[in-house]
Amino acid sequence: MELRLDLRLSQKLVMTPQLQQAIKLLQLSRLELQQTLAQHLVENPLLEDLALESQEEETVNAEEGGEQVKEREVEADESGDSEEIQPAIKESEPLTSEEWDNILGNDWRPAQRDQIGGGDDDFPSYEQTLTKPPSLEEHLEWQLRLSSLEGVNRDIGRMIIGNLDEDGYLRVPLLELQEDAQCSLEHLEQVLRQIQTFDPPGVGAKNLAECLLIQLGHFQHDETAITHPLSDAVSKNLVSAIIKDHLTDLQKKRYQVVAKTLGVTLDEVYEAVHVIEGLEPKPGRPFSMDSNSIIIPDVYVVKHEGEWVVLLNEDGLPRLRVSPYYRRLLSHSGEDAGKTKTYLEEKLKGAQWIIRSIDQRNKTIVKVVTSLIKFQEAFLEKGVQYLRPLVLKQVADDVGMHESTISRVTTNKYVHCPQGILELKYFFNAGIQRADNRGEDMSSVTVREMIREMVTQENQANPLKDQEIVARLKQKNILIARRTVAKYRAELHIASASQRKSIPI
Image (cartoon, rainbow, N blue to C red):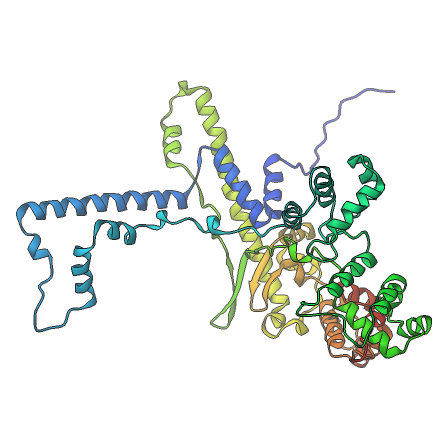
């Protein structure tokens, strides 16, 4: 084996920290970008928010202007010319609203003037006026304090309430609760039955059947209820029997099996089903704390003078710039500055890089959205029926970027367009082949919308099966498999044909 030295030249891509930071900024959502920029403003003294600086300058100018006005008023009072400032009032002409305000303003009492002239700071903020609705646990604990349970029983009741899920069910086994409560199983069940009498009806049940039976008992004893689910045409025993033994048959709409097993007529089963449909399967639903999230679009797409224009939404984002003070300090610092100059130079490079990265991010987003408009212009003007199939590679080839870059740009980004606020990923979808092989493929989103419209317009007594939907789509020159229809139906949260079938009224 011979040892020797070779000199070779090669090229390779190195992910520098600056490049990693630029890639990270590109895929951040709007909220994450706000948090990241706020963190950079805190850590880098050479970065400053131009918007905040403008607000501070306006505040200082307003304060200086107010002081000058006060000085002129004092000078006018001292010179005795205050009467000339007030407008002259003629007896023959009616007073204007401004003249009445001037007269009444001088006659206000100090207390009224302070009360009416107070600024917005005297009132509570909008957040302070919001009230939090009671949760299910708080609602039940309030009833527990008003109940006859005391001492150990109240502690056990509080433990039971704490183990209820958001739907109001007790999913924890009673044997496990018995170990924590250190009481007999009969004692625990006695307290549980007391909790099950609380509002909302059905709370504290261990399963769906028990929940419905508890509600049935509540409505049977509550004769003053405005909407009473029990009628004279159906008996409580029939409804209870169906709930106990035939919930699976009800789910699959097998009413004939229920009628034959219980020895009743089909009309009686229909009446019992109407009663069961009036019960609440999730007692804790009214106390759920679901809140709608607010989406702020990253870009706006508008049509101006016949052309589509892409506008970046920069509201709420800091306008970064390098601080002029530190730039002057760095330029005038001598060679003996030492570590201070080195620190400022390092922070200056970081500030310039983050500003360039944000500018490049904005340009990339605008370029990608402009390409999306080129492909989906018909959708923007006419609706979802004209959405074209589109993949990342088509946009990547159009803008001259890699597919991974397009994926990062369209992640967690939203656009406001004539069709609403949509995620950029919405514009990318697969294509469905046409039966006649003529023309381009149809978008999968369009096919989903067609399936949803078919289900909406179907006969509820005889709903469409998946194979029937396939046949109707084929009539419209759309070639699709039955399992694909089932997949799209599940994505649209549409139940199967057997579950969509409704009973005659």
